[in-house]
View (cartoon, rainbow, N blue to C red):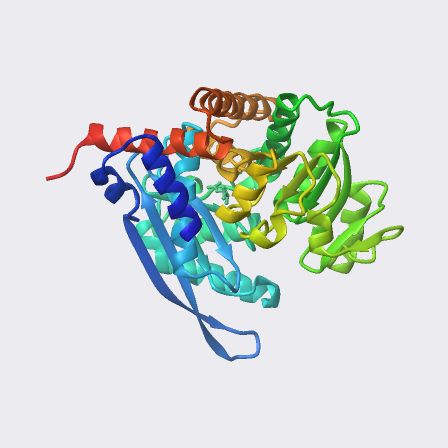
Length: 407
Ligand code: GLU
C-alpha cells in the first residue's frame, strides 16, 4: 500500500492537483470483507478471509482480478485495486478499478475444494458484482476454471446465463480468443517498444524472467517468437538457465510441478536471476521483488514489470539512477485487462471476434498507451512510471471533476 500511495502522491504533485483531488483519489470507494467457509474433502470446516475492493467506479464499472494467495490481506487488495484504476484509465478502458481475493494457498486445495471455495466466495460477493457493476477476472492463483465456477454461481442465482459477469473464462463459455496469453503478449509488445527506445536489436537480445505462471510463460513464448533469447526463468522454488527452449521447461514443469531439475539446466537462486547480465529483466511473480536490497545488482538495461508492483519505491530510485528503463506494471501488464475488455464487449454483444482481430486491437490500444507514456516522459522529463501514473490519475481526476460531487 505504501508503494501505491507514494506513486499516487507523486502523480498528484506532478499534475498540481488539489488536496481535494488527493482526498478523492486516495480513498477506496467500497470494501467488502467476507468470511469464506470451506468444507474440506475430509469433512473439516475451515474459515478463510475473502475481500473485494472497488477502488473506483468513476469511469465505469470496476474491474480487476481475484487472487488466491496465503499472503493476501485487505491492505494489499486495496493497493492492487488502486493500480487497476490507473491501469484502466491509462489504457482508456471504460472501467474503474477493483481487486479481490481469498487468503488461501491454492496449492493446498483439491479440485473439489477449490470449486467449493470459489463458489462460496462468489456468493458472498454476489451483491456487489455484475456486468454493469464490477467484473472479476483471473489473477495470481486463479484461472479460467475458477472463472467458469464464478460465472455459473452468478448465473444460477440470476436464473439465466450471464457470461459478462467475469472475464478470462473458457472459450466455450464466452471467453475471448487470445485472453489466456494476453498479459504475456502485452509484456512482449512493451519489451519490443522499450528495446526500440534503447536502440537494442530484438534479434538475439537476452531476457531473464522471474515467474513462470500465466504471465511469465506467455511472455516467454511471445518474446521467443519475436527473436529474443530467453536465458533464464524461475518459479517459487528458484530459477533455471541453460535450457534450449521455454517449451521444454514448460513440459517438464507440467509433469513435475516445478521447473527445477528440467533436463540440461543449471540452477539459479532468485537473486542470481535478478542480477544476470541480460538486456531485459521481467519480474513476473509477486510484489516487492526489486527492492533497496536487490536493485543495485540489476544489470539489465530494461526492466519490464509483468507482475503488479514488483518494484518498491527505493528499488525504483536505484534502477532510475543506474539509467535502466523501467516499463511500469500498469502499462507493461495491461494486455490482460485490455483483452478482458474485449471479452466483456463480445459477451454483451453476443458476437465473437477472430484471433487476428483480438491481436490487432490489443496492439492498437497498447501502442497508443505506450506512445502517450513515452511522449509524456519526454515532454515532462519524468520516468515512464511517473508518466503512466500521471496519465491514468489525470483521467480519473478529470472524470471526477466533470461528474461533480453528489449531493
Ligand atoms: N489480474 C489482471 C491484472 O492485474 C487482469 C485483470 C482483468 O482482466 O480484469 O491486470
